[in-house]
Image (cartoon, rainbow, N blue to C red; front, side):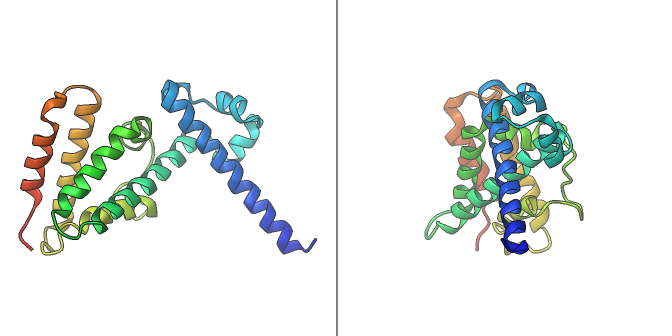
Length: 192
């Protein structure tokens, strides 16, 4: 077998193992929470030795960071889809609904992205492309606000995150969710 085919197969196998480890971490976290996601537990879940997991990620935090980055890729795609599907209507409202739906439908993933103390840089030169892509979907909501677009996107994101977290922790009554979103959208909707 030619050397390049062997290298390609090894790379595919490595990527498949990595995806399997990330998938197992997500499943365990959704069922039992992030404290249950340990290297030993994942090793048992997927029948790979602990050294294999360490070879891929270096540490438990490395695994959680990889899950968080995958989550940012997913939320970025969800926000992009919400933004692009609006023909008539309010793009800000569509993106807000997609964000809050993502947070509600994937609570463990959302938690690892935003609430666990991971070393994932935000707003820095080392920020992963997946985070930059997700944030760019919020920036796209404020095209006519060039000098303030980044701050507006940050404040919109902070507002959505606050609503998502307060809802997740049951500090906001469910009954006013539509009204909250409507008023938030009004605050961040600017004439074209």
